[in-house]
Amino acid sequence: MIRRDAADVRLPAPLTYGLEVLIDQSRLLPVTDATADVVRLVLSDAFAPSFADWSAGAWGYEVEDGVVRVPRAALAHVTAVAGAAAEQGSAERDRYGRVPSAVHPLVLVGREREPVVSQAASALCEAVRRAAGRRPVRLLAPWPGGHRWAAAFTHDVDVVAGWPAFTALRLAELVRKGRLARASRVVVAALGAVASDPAWRGTADVIAAERAVGASATWFVLTGTPTWTSIRAGDLTYRPESPAARRIVAAIVAAGSEVGLHGSFATLDGGAPVFAAQRARLAGIAGTPTSGVRQHYLRTRPGVTARAMADAGFAYDATLGFADRNGFRLGTADVVPAWDAGSATVLPIDEVPLTWMDRALSKYQGIEDPDRWVDDALALADACQAVDGLWVGLWHCNLTPALGYPGAPAAYRRLVASITARDPWVASLAEIVAWRRARRSICATAVTPSGDPVLADSDGRVAAGVRFDD
Image 1 (cartoon, one colour):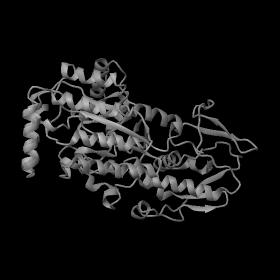
Image 2 (cartoon, rainbow, N blue to C red; image 1 turned 135 degrees about the vertical axis):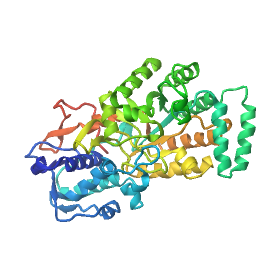
Image 3 (cartoon, rainbow, N blue to C red; image 1 turned 45 degrees about the horizontal axis):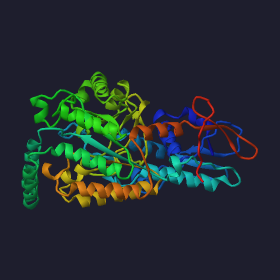
Image 4 (cartoon, one colour; image 1 turned 45 degrees about the vertical axis):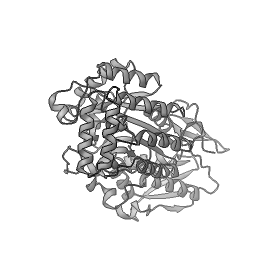
């Protein structure tokens, strides 16, 4: 258990955000009673690690009896990454309007594949243990059901009909890359699928792979009215009310999985009204609430887009991963509140960082072997598991042989089996976010003479069902 220094109330908002993220991810139980004999967190200017040093593990914590001193500079680094403050301060854009990964602070120091914020939180927890002495230290359980880490399978529904056109585009991509043998396999598969529906087959195969291990997933569905302009841009290619789309959405719901919005290009400039209209339209089709969103092509303006999403009623955003590489864009293997650097405020929406995506490898890295995609996913899962964190993977359900991806269905079955064999808590993103919000709200109002915490949530109500780490 820890107590923040009273002087923290005068902290600038960006540093407060960084401190609260660190405490939340450390799983240390905060105590509000100023008289409780627990470890105190005190901010310090004695050491100011550079971003490169901090991200390499020079956390700068100073340990004394009953006190851990935390560098203010370290809090700024947490906000720069976990709050995407550094990206919000960048004017750089790629051809899709995204902040290029090349200017990301973790990419610049070569540490984008490490959950450095999660590591910093774990180090804070160990520093508190060293400072505690006889004082009680209680950690909140990382995930429900005794699980040490969590995993989420997610899918973007980009193709539901007109599959020959998508196969042709994929063949052109393979030929351009000189992958003629693979292109030949695609032609054979496509000819054999002329009388079938490869887009539906891809969806059904993914659902079957997850059902085999009892896993639920989260599916993001494009919702808008396609035009020739949107089709040429690779954006909206189907109406969500079409029979093919309704069939897919119905199968997702029947499998017990979550349906979220795949925000079209129009949402980037249209803001909250366009988000709200698409959200309501999708909820009417799915017959279930729509609480999450992920942008198509990961097109987002950190902070600005998240505010529009929050205003449209979304609980979480699952966009913030790298498009052209896999890793930890927010520096964390966990859910964090969204930060708006422009107004220096925490937004009422959570960010669920995207850890791994298939197309980051095949499209951007030129890696066409699906088994190598899975190896990359499992390597990042190792990093998440090491910090008791959350791994979020994105597998596009149109990855079938006839649509240009020989070997992909078998690779996805291996991915699902390998992840679930490691005993994570597997749930939809809506369930994960709801659970993390509940855990984040828990604090102790006092400590009994025997060292037990008196619990409440952020509204002062008695916290129920709280589990501590064994």
